[in-house]
Every structure is written in structure tokens, then in C-alpha cells.
Amino acid sequence: RSATEILLRLKIPQNMDGYRRAPPPAAAAASAASVLGDDDLLREIFIRLGFPNCLVRAALVSQRWLLNASDPAFLRRFRERNPPRVLGVCAGYSVRPFKFVPLPQPPELAALSRRAASSCAYAFARGGQRIEHCRNGRLIVESLRKGTFKHSVLAPLLYGEPEAVLPPIPPPRRHPQELTQGSFTQIFLPEDGGREGITLVNLWKVQREVRAEVYVLGAAGWGVPTTAITEIELQYAATFFAKMLPPVHGKVFVVTGFGYTLGLDLATATFVMLQLPAGVRYNYMLSSAEGSGIYLVTVDRFQLSVWLHRMAGDNHGAGGWLLVDTFSVLEACARLAGDSWVPCEYLNVAAVGDNADFVFLDHPSSGVIFYVHLSSRVVKMVYQRTADEHECRSVAVRISPVMTIWPPIFPALNIGHDQEV
Image 1: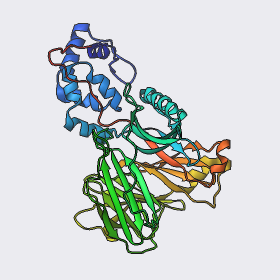
Image 2: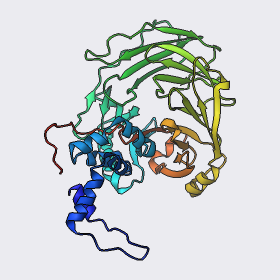
Image 3: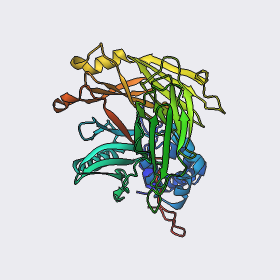
Image 4: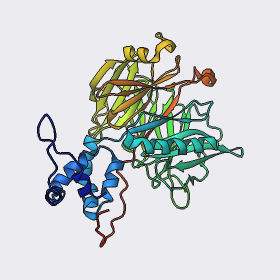
């Protein structure tokens, strides 16, 4: 239906008791045209659509609607009011393949959620072992095929985009006799989740020195590292690298357990040491904030805390952190987990959203994954470990949230064919 036809079908309230009779078609059409002909009013209607896929559908009506819906200033307003939604999570343990766990969705997002579930199920059934990184609707999946580990990029929300198999991973260029005490090889999607700018990081530690190589995937493959091996001397020789966190503002951070995190700038292959808030050691995740800031989300047993660091200039000390929120999730988690709850245990931070919008928490003993929307403090149980996963109770779960794509992908503007659909 055209937008005019849709508006003509609306009932117009007269008072608290009922509805007045609809005006004549000509008058109603003129009234609708006066509204839809005003770009300011049209954008106010668009911003209340709520979901980016609904915005794309509205953009199909005409070129004028497309221009208004895709305007960068309007999109910034739309995102502030309607941030990207979590469709579900890809969850898995190190000893088992991942699975897609859908989250409850409104009717407008049900089709997207089903598409993500079916696409991920197909990929994991073909040998997908784990997810290296997930960003803006795309996944980098590691699969075991014919005895060889391969990496590919999947786009479960983009209909028709084929799987892209990545070139073999180059090994770290370290001396064979070096005694490494910790090493990582990770592949990351760029911030926009696109195929351009996929980055490979090789990072390892020798005594107090940390060395890293950064590759960017190009048309000819991985090529050579964009910079030479970079070295930094750690504060403590016994520093242990627990895990490498996903990129935040173009930097990857390594959890050390010594009251600071080691950051690697992917563009310049240089290191930075960022002191952590007092008492924070292992159980935290980082999230990008507006500008160049960083959120840190941590849990001390069941007390959830959110910190913000503005990262201005060279202020990387612990004094740069501001506690913006803290609250207990014990009561909500115990109530949701029911009989499977083990109160003496703790929660792990498994994943966190941009701008610290949400966090996923893992309760290893009960095998339950919780979703917490941080600003509203709403807690939901999204997954319960199955009976055949019982042997995974001592293994931390890996979580990759699958989000609605932002910015929306609009149709190409076809000049000269402005006709309402």
C-alpha cells in the first residue's frame, strides 16, 4: 500500500469515548499529503519506526523517502533513540561447536532472528568449531575441514552474500629457540564489520618482552606485517596473559592479571599500558564509549560495576577511571536460575556491548548465561547448559552477540524513477 492509503485506514480519535467518522477521501488525502510532504514531519515519523529494517522498508517508497531515511544527521538521531538490538548469541565451549541462541524478539525482528539462526546452524553443522570475532552482522568462523583449520567470513543477516574463505594464517616470525610464555593469534573484523580491513594479530611474550605482528588482509593475501616486530618491557617477568579482548577504538587489549591491561594499537603496532581500577584483575571486558573513551565492565562475585575512562591524551593511569554504575545481580540471577543455582559460585563477564549497553554473564556451576541491560538493570536468563554439555561445567563459555546491522544498508538511489510503491 502507498503511505497515503495507510494513513487513510487510520482511525482518528475524537474524544475519550469513541472515534469520529473518517473525512471524505479527497480531504484525507490532502491532509496526509500535507504531512508526508513536510520532510521534518516525515523524519519524525521515521524515527518512531524503532528498527533499522523497518527504516529500510520505508526508504523503498520513493527517492525522497530514501534521502530522508539515509541522511547521516537523521541516522545519528535514529541510533540514539533506537540502538542496535541483540538478535541472539553464538555460544560455545572450547570442547564443543558453537550454537546460535536466539533472544526473544518483537514481530518486526522475528524474520531477521530466524535468518541468523538458520545461517549459523548451517555453518556450525559444516564443522564450525569456534568464532574468532563477530561484528555488525558478520562472523569470522574457524572450522576443521579435512584435518585443516580454516577461517571464513559469514554474513548471516545479509541475504545472498557468499562465504569468504580467508587465506592460511601466517605463523609468528619468532626465533625457533625463543621460549615463549604466552602467545595469541587472533583475527578481527574492522569496526564497521566489513570485509575490508580484516586484521590478524600475532602476539607473544619472551621474559619481560612482548612482541607483536599486525597484518591487514589485502587483495594479495596477508602479505607482510604492516610494521616490524614491536617490543615492550613488562613491569613483571611473571606477567601472565589470560586472553586477548576484541578491539576497542582500533586497539586490542590483553588481560594480564597484574592490575593493568596491555593495549596494542592496530594501526601503528605500538603498545600502551592502561592501569585498571583498584581490585580489577581478570574478570572484565572492555567496550567502546563515545569519542575515544573506554568502558570497563567487571563483576566481583555478584556485584556488577561499570567504569569509564576518557583516554584523553596520555592519561592512562588508574586515576582516569570513573565509576558510573554498580549494582548486585545476585537476587535476579538466583531467581531466574531456580533449582540449578549454586550460590557459593561467581559470575564471569562473557561479552559486553558497545557503549556498555549490555553484558552477558556466565555462571559456570549452574551452566546458565544471563543477559543484563545495564541502563535499565533488567536481567534475563538466555541459556541453560544441556545434559550433554555437563562435562563443560569447568570450562568458560565463549559468547559472540549477533546484532542488527548498523548503519542500515539502503537500496541504491535510482535517479529518474521516483514513484510511490
